[in-house]
Every structure is written in structure tokens, then in C-alpha cells.
Length: 393
Image (tube, rainbow, N blue to C red):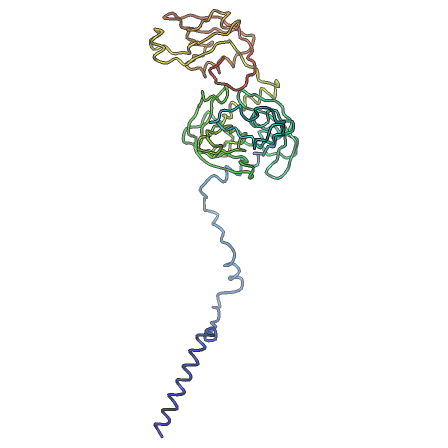
């Protein structure tokens, strides 16, 4: 009898274990125990957990979001439409990019894309001359989606600055900084509309200051930066870490049209001065004396027996120009324009350009071992297409 009971028990256990195995394999959820939520966990607590966390107010964000927010509303996209001309798009050096947009076949209208910066609440904005040069229609789009047709107030091809005007209410204006206070290594942001993807902010540092003799414009004093500047950024803003405008992006060093980390911006001080003159007089008027110059190297100074003298070598004198009429000759070394000492072709060009046409200036010259001075009556410089700054002063 006992043996029979044990056999029944063993068979029952075997059946139960087999049933549990089948359930655990096919329906494991049947065996899970539903535990009640702790009393502290309420529906409100569960909802709060599901929401994204907010950083404490005391957390200070790293980066330059505040500078970007301050400057970005004043940076606009520009669409310029112009008729195609023979050789269009070929005037610029292949190493320096001046993006205007896709090149169309001859006879087709060009549609260029660039950027601009609003500098006053009444709608005055700056861009590059090469963005709007020859355009029959210029349209501006703000970051808030508003669009307006722009009026071209004036241009200065020799600095590649153009001044536009739009009429819209409530326009944002960027704060103007001081480019003269920039130092190599300062953080800067480039803001524009690269490749027409929409407004974009890139960051970098000031790589160099006072870049000139690049052959981009006759008047050069560029800020060099490694902030990414690409096609469509031309005319856009270069701002400092406080969001103040320090430059107008104008060119890149590139072999294929994209950013290689070498970009150039026109200092805001120069752009502001040009804009003020255009708004007042309608055009920029510069002085001219008619000399072609060369850098005075140590070898040339020794050959001309100038010792350690500094100045700019006169390579040629334009016929019937003020310098020639005053008695200046090829081979002379110009050392002074008025009270300003000059030691490079760029300094000479800037000093002469700042003179008022019709005025008279005393020019200091070193001829051989003799110091001389000439009274030169300043003429008006003709507006030239971009060329090297030292070609003609």
C-alpha cells in the first residue's frame, strides 16, 4: 500500500513539474507576480519623470550662443539677379573664392546668393560689391521670413563694399564692434547663408590681422580667420564673442570653392567709413598722385646707397600725373606723405587715398643719399577694377 502511494505522489509531482515547464516556456508572463507601486509613486510623479529634464538656472552654458542670438537676426540672405555677360565669373583669381552662385551658360541670367548685415534700424545694410555688382534686382530675406526688395545706395569696388537699403518696420540692427582692438587668437563667429542651406553660424579665431598685397582688392587690410566661410557667406557678418560686428566676410583661399580654413573679412572700421561716405556723398572719392611703386628691400636699399632707410621705391611715374609734374622720378624713394611716414606700398596707397582731391601735400623723397621734398597737387583717383594695391597710387 505504501509503495503504491509513493508511486502516485511521484507521478503527480512529475506531471506538475512538466506543466510548469510548459507554462514557463510558452507563457512566462503567467508566472510573473504583479507588484503594487509604492505609495510614494503617484500619477503626477510618473508624469514628471517622463518629461525632459531642465538644467538648473545656475548652470552656465559653454559656447557662444548668446553672441549668435545677438547678431543673427541682423544677418540677411541676398538674392541678386543679373544678366550674363561674356567672361562672367572669370574676373577673380582662382585661388580666392568670391562665390556668387552657379555659373549659367552665356545668355542666361545669373542668380547669385550672398549675405548682408543690417547696421541701422532704418534699413541700411552692408554687403560685398561682388554680390550685387551689375544686378538688376536685389531681394533680401530676414531670418523671421520677411522679404523686401533692396535699393542699391552705392558701391565701392576698390574695397568690395556695397550699401543697400530696405524699407520694413521693426528691423534688427547689429552692434558695431572695434576691429582695431582685435588680437590674433580672439574668438570670432561667421554668420551667413552658405550654399543656400539657411542661416549658419561657424566659429573660429582671428588667424592674422592686416593681410594685404593679396591681389584681391586695391585697398586691403583683411582680418584672416579659420571660421568656415563658404559660397553664400560673402557679405555676411564676422562678429566677436559679444556678438558685435567686426568684419564683412568677403573671400576665401580655396582651390575648389570650399572652405580650407583661410577666410578674409573687411574690417568693420573700413566698411563703416566707406558706408558713411557713400551715404553722405553717393560715392567714395580718393586722392591720386600717379606713381607705380615697389617694396623697398634691403638689397635695393643697399644698391641705392640708402643705408637703413625706409620707404617705398618709385618704379614708374605716370605721364602728366601730379607726382611727375612736381618733379618726382623713377628710382626715388618716397618716405613721407604730409606728416605720415610710409614704409610699404599699402601704407602709401592708404595715405594718398585719404587726401582730398585738389589739395596740396608735401611729399618726402630720398634720392640717392639726399633727402628732398616736393609740393604735389592731389588729383582724384579714378574708380578702378580690383588690382594689386601697389600698382598705382
